[in-house]
Structure formats: structure tokens, C-alpha cells
Image (cartoon, rainbow, N blue to C red; front, side, top):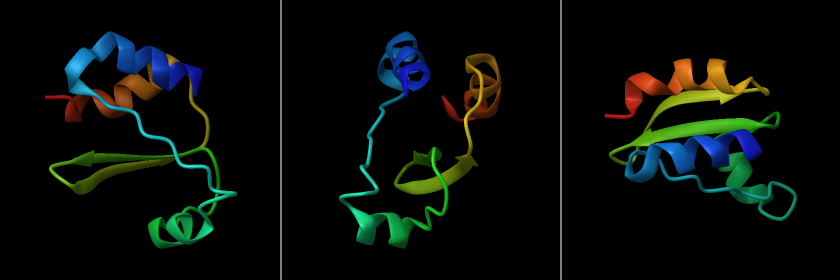
Length: 70
């Protein structure tokens, strides 16, 4: 999560991080299809445009999400 917070701080208004405690919000996690954590859902205009599962280094994560940060 620290890497995501760093990226969000660097991106300013281009990225907002929202977390979900899957242990306490099991119904929501189920509706989202979270089968493994960490899971990242990238939304644009209310629609999921990218889903990533598993930890990644900061540089790899940035490569994955950068095309959507417009």
C-alpha cells in the first residue's frame, strides 16, 4: 500500500486511492471478484479499465497505470 500512496501523492489530482478491508467487507469484495490480495482496480469514468492482482515494484506499477492517468 505504501507504493500506491507514494504514486498517488506524486500524481496529485490524476489519481485517488481508495482501500477496502476485504476481511470486513466480504460482500463488496465478492461483488468485485477479489480472489487474491493485493488487488488493484483502476476506474475511469466509473468503469473498471484495468485490474491488477499481486504485488509489483513501483516502476512496474507505474508502467501499468500510466496510460490511464490522463
